[in-house]
Length: 130
Image (tube, rainbow, N blue to C red; front, side, top):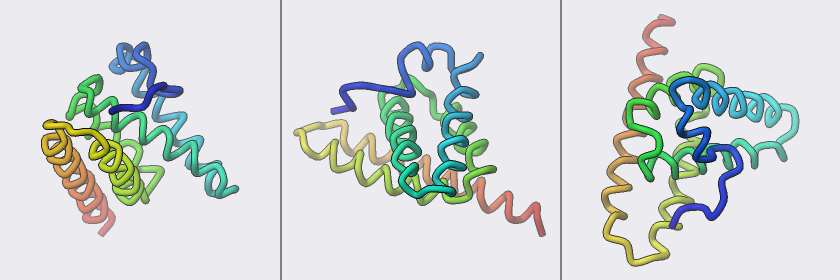
């Protein structure tokens, strides 16, 4: 049960991920993040981008390596990326559980692995600063 429409991560963006899609989504995310710091109501767009990205990741339009790289890049400007991932994960988990879906546990496993990678990136960055 993935979103019925994608505003940011269209199939075209996913197909062009290596050449321009990744950078395009990262720019939209970072712009939304900066806008949300000025006006909290802009946080919806930030979560919408993350929601679409996580669903594209689950649908295997974005590989695990690409997702890890994107999250690493996004975390440079958005230190709250891990919290944001967990917030959106809770929504996606609820969406997945609305249907009788055998892939639900596999999807949660992919997310758990992804969150661990984000934590590792964050710790590595903190150690570099010391």
